[in-house]
Image (cartoon, rainbow, N blue to C red; front, side, top):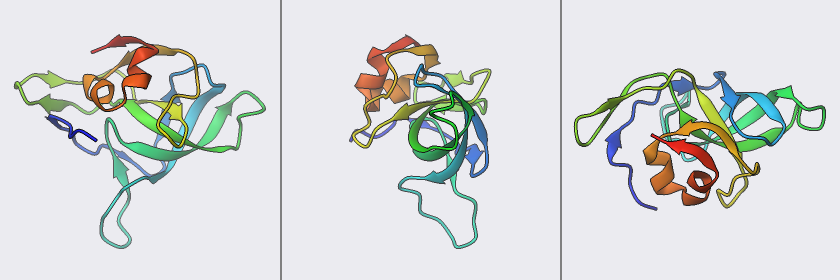
Length: 132
């Protein structure tokens, strides 16, 4: 997989709640784990834009509530810097539910997603409303 060309701070920790920005049936999800995370013992796992996470669905349709799913972070409030010097931040934290291969579970994404996500996950970018 291609590396991300931006210095993205890992601003979302275990226990953070995110808006689920697709039409899969989930509305609010909570981070319970980060895939590929390496760190010290007893340290909170952290994630940023473009990271795959394990989430628990907190609000949504009755079929989705209390389910454990994989998700991809597409927006974060914390500002990050791109390689060209541009600083980017979004107005909320958002994720999109994906399957084991990184393909989206929903058929559309309501808001904008970061360009760093679009480079690494083109199938997610294909169903997004906008790429920033």
